[in-house]
Image (tube, rainbow, N blue to C red; front, side):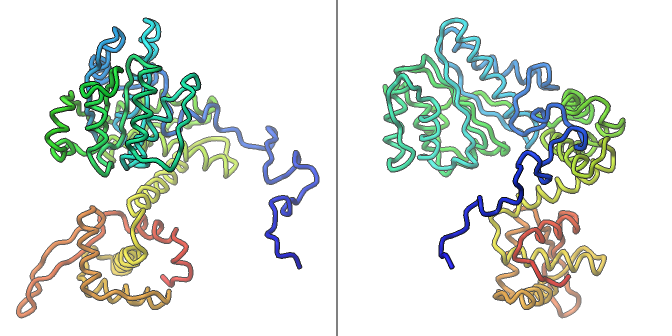
Length: 421
């Protein structure tokens, strides 16, 4: 018997790949729901006619960046707002229009978008900016690894001087950065003589208190303009959905789909991103089920999926023990039709779950500490209550999220295989 691992070709099951039923694309048998699915992708920057309810914000951000069209330095900008309020969309839209307008005036402007949730260290941000702005004509080869932030900045200053009159750098979720060093380096590059190129920074954050945490030297150096994006209301959300209707084939959406999607999103603080995700997933559900129409039922199923997905995102990075504890609390809530339980009650159920899965059991005090951490994150709400005569006071905990959402989310983790509900 060969010790070599199997190759992908070893798994071929058909002599004619074009007729493989697993990937059938025959228009006569496949349900056709989408016409331009890219309109429903997160990160897609639509034409200005599709951006709804953000005319004032577009003009405000553009006013701060407009000087680059005249080859003058742009202003730095800080944008705050809840998730799904159009911060990234407006910023990317405006910076691209600024770049094109500058090019028409023969001003070389570069734009960079950095997701600080992914690139959260000084070195990663410096590498991302430098490699994005580098051009073939510089003849500079910038390594992916093996050098530090200082070396990347040395490359960056050289690229800027060779290629650009001005550059706009978007730092999305800037509050996820491990330090303020990135803002310090970029905001002082021209002042310190490292680059002749004008640099404009647009920093985006969901946390309005972010600026208060910045080093005073960084605040002084940035001297930025601040804007707060308010949540969309239900009417604006309906308009946003209507402007994405042509993502679907004509006549596919039933009349109640867009109003219901907007209503769900309006309940979640006007989150347009969530509305678009629900609409897209509803279409995908219809396709999988072979349905010719996207209906209210698909939207309701997609809404539940979105809630589970969002809660799973909230739990990402949590330990298995935290999931065991939340699972215990969710089961208690479901079984007893109650909402608040003491630490000892949760600990007792948690012990049973660990025993079923042959997992280590933490102490009751440690479970108590982890429940307090989840309260800080907004997953659990903990309140102190009197225990009656001679019992003293103690904490009671309840889930903030819907019980079924919590159960479905934690059960997606394969480590829960075999658990007895």
